[in-house]
Image (tube, rainbow, N blue to C red; front, side, top):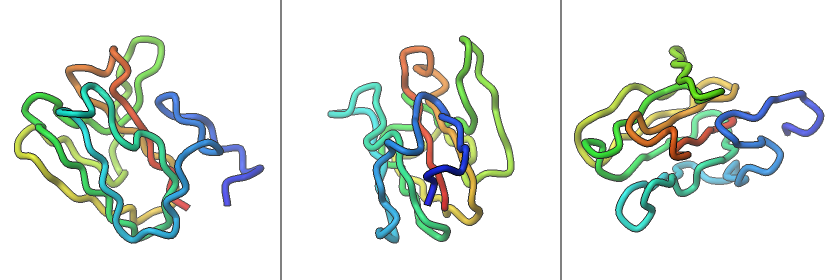
Length: 119
């Protein structure tokens, strides 16, 4: 459980207020279309081994790994996400505990970002 562990917010996502998806083996994160410039859900907690399935138009909303802070993108590596700019679906596995941010390269300054907190 994240309570009291000192985990900092990532991309505007507070780990204590994030959607609790720890009982689900696969989570779908939609974007584009009916979701517009939002990820749905954008902030979530999962357990180790959970599959994170992103669905939407990556050509219009290319996925990046990292955070957006003070108007700057801070890319990260070593997490579950990889840069994705083509296709409509990709699945990542949350294999290691930690905090992992993701964002749309084109619309991050408009708030299109989120985070996964892996327990």
